[in-house]
Amino acid sequence: MRPSRITDPEFRNAVAELAVPGMGTESVAPLLADLIGFLRPRRVLEVGMGYTTPFLAAALAGTEEQARAESEALAVKTRRHLDAGGELDDSWLLEHPPLVTPASHLTPHRPKMVAVDDLSMEDSSARQVLEVLRKLRLADFVSVIDTDLRTSRDLLPEDSTPIDFAWVDAWECLYFFDHFWELINPDGGMVVMHYLTTYPEGEALIRYIKAFQRSNPGELETVNLLEPHKLMQNSITVLRRTSGVHSLRYAETGGKIKYSGQLQADAAAHSQRHAD
Image 1: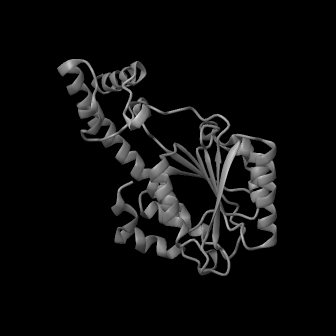
Image 2: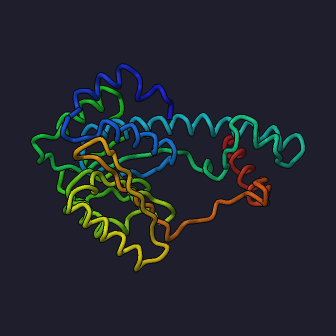
Image 3: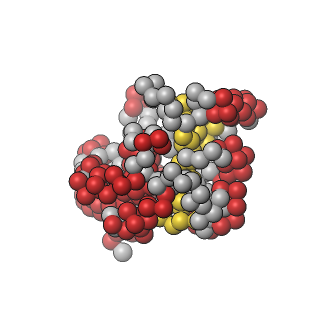
């Protein structure tokens, strides 16, 4: 993601209209944007619109731009190396863009987000989100489902699953885990839930998830992050689904890259796609 996108004055002024002091997302929103930039998910789900929505959308727009430029540069350097000697090596690896995996660029990166919200919370800024997205030219990245989470599953677009990244900022986190977990991408799909620590119902859900984890080995990884300086709305719980993770290891002993036949084939296929 371009660092300037969410720090741009136009963006900051627009999202300021959505800030609600009691929601506690002023630190979470940029963190979510950074996670989007780090993970580059293609299918994103948000449950509970508000201050975080434009951050997620801006991050998706940024990854699309970055991936497009990266893919073009990767094709150029790959073609140059293949034309020169027919093999990839460390000089190819470190040339701009450095360390990039050709397999991740075999199809264009066009991320989309679905946001679920029935606009029932009077103290939420969800009603103003669409106008802010339009103002920031980000509305095309977000499809809104105006309904409760419990009735939303059948309304999800066909191309919105498996879900690569979900942000759940709603009281129905238990319902989400019980009814949406199977829609999360088993190859490392991530769910981030807001504010489960430091209050009894949330802590009970964390114990429930840990029990599920024990009875389903290899299904997920979890971590809880706390903002200890806050009284409430002060944590995120991160779940990563791991039941279908594909190995992406290209390294040999000592961290050296193994220029396997598959890596060579992926690089050649990617370069040819751009040539076509």
